Length: 300
Ligand SMILES: [Ca+2]
Ligand SMILES: [Ca+2]
Image 1 (tube, rainbow, N blue to C red):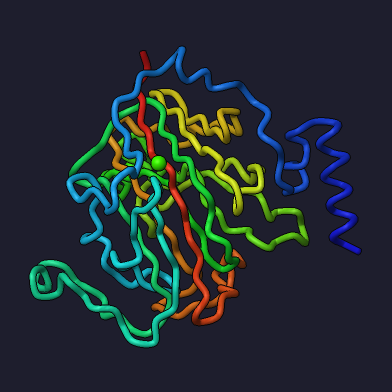
Image 2 (cartoon, rainbow, N blue to C red):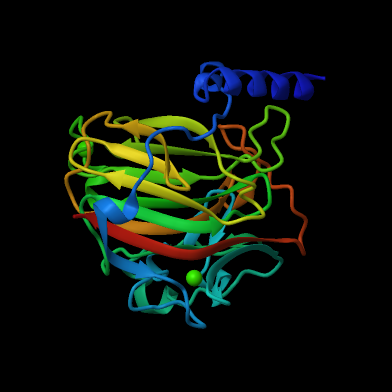
C-alpha cells in the first residue's frame, strides 16, 4: 500500500517538477545542464580495461588490503575481462591470503583477514592525480542490498582539519546503496556527496541527495563529476544532477578510487547507521561491479 502510494507520489511530483521529489526526500530524475563533453573538455587520461588483467602501473590495490566495514578488501576480487573491470563481492569461509604482511607488515597495520565477505578497492594513489576537469565512469552496479559500489576521489589533505575543504576533499561521484529498496522508490537511485576535515569530530560534508539512473543494476550508465575552483557539478549520463561548493572546493590534485563495500563493522556484516544492509546475499552468491571505463578530461 505504502509502496504504491509513494511511487504514485513520485510520479506526480516529477511531472510537476523533476527536482520536487527531493522536498520529500525522494529520488529525482537528472534534469540540469547538458555536459557538452567534446565542446568543453579534452581527454587527459583513461583506462578502457581492454587487457586481460588490471594495469598495475596505474591501479594500486596493496594500500587497501584491509578489513573494511562489514567485510574485507582483497585484490583477488579484481579482474579484467571482455573490456571491463570487474570487482566481485563473495563470501569465503577461509580467510584469503594476505600477500603483503611479510613485505610491509612493519610499516602498515594490516587487519587480519577472517571468514566473511570479500570485495575490493583499486586506486590511482601515487600514480595518477589531477586538479579540476571532468571525471567519468561507465558501469553496471552490483546487485545486492547491504553493500555499495562507488567511484570517488581522495587527497591526503582530506584529513587536515582546518574548517575548509580547499586543502582536499573526498568527492563521492556516485555511491549505490539502494538495490531492492523499492518501498520508497529508491531502488534505481544513487547519491553523490563530499567529505572534508577528516572523519572524526572535525568531519564535515554535504550531499546532493538521490538521483535516478536508467536500470543501473542491469545496464551501463555514466556517472560524472565536473570540478572547477568554484564548484562540483555531478552528472548522470551527461545530464546534471546537482552542484556542491560547501566548505570551499578542493584546490589540490585528487586521485581516483573504485570500490565496493559491505555494510557492517569489524568484518561483520550488518545494517549500518544509515540503515544500509544487512547484505542479502548468501554464501555462494556473488555480486559484480562492472566498469567499462574510467576517463578523465581537462577544460579546454
Ligand atoms: Ca580541511
Ligand atoms: Ca571498456
